[in-house]
Length: 392
Image (cartoon, rainbow, N blue to C red):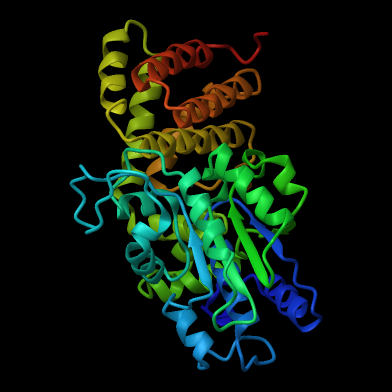
């Protein structure tokens, strides 16, 4: 991947390019930012530029032996690490790989190459889980994976000036793997670069954060995302393009989801409307139980996706309720419900609703029993929705 393939982020691209020109390449860097905003693409293009044998003024050449091997993701001095899990019993038709014990990234390398090519360097975690048939599990970067990483990087570079390790979603490392990575960062093998990619700073070990150069990746600029949306779907009107870019908030994956009017996005809306009505309605315990039974059968990533969607609906409702319409970003099918729902979300209950939803996401990641979690969330939500704005 080259810098020219990356959507927007022009200032950051130049910063990375200049670090190479001025020989200021930090051996351990963390590309940090929420969502699918180009973190992986930037780290990949940066690595390719560093090892390009015919560097251009503002990009790698794309034609030298190193660039061609990077494009094919087959360079012998380029290594990847990403969350995986066992999938022996999956019914997924998107992968031919079947792993039943001690999964590591290398087991899924062909799936990884195909996936990165499909998404043009803009991977999404849940989509990756679907690709390898583990959407009902938590992906992780394990102790066995860290052992493989250390082993691979001990050898001298075969062709390039630098060996490069790109760890995608580093927050998915377990404690043992994180400590092994920390040691690797503290005592790196010669001519080795480690590029970490993360969404959430708070889930990383403070000791790792203190030993890496943090590259904060901002959301993609609206005008650049609009250009991408226009190229992706030329049939859209300018008004539609602007609305999609606003709602996507600088996130490529979100923009694609909105353009495709994905089933999951609509399903989240329908589930949210049903949930809110059940929580507010008197005598709806039986209905809540039926709703909980349905949601508890979802995979954990889908459950998290729903709660994250609910958090967005909370924010938009609060803005609507307090007349901040210019800051509201909602889709057409969401508007009529939220206009009616917004008065029930106010400064007295919004912080507590956000708190229980955030806690729900945290508990899902800790593999809590889904039925108990969503039952508890529903009961708390029922109380909070009926709170008058003048209470407390």
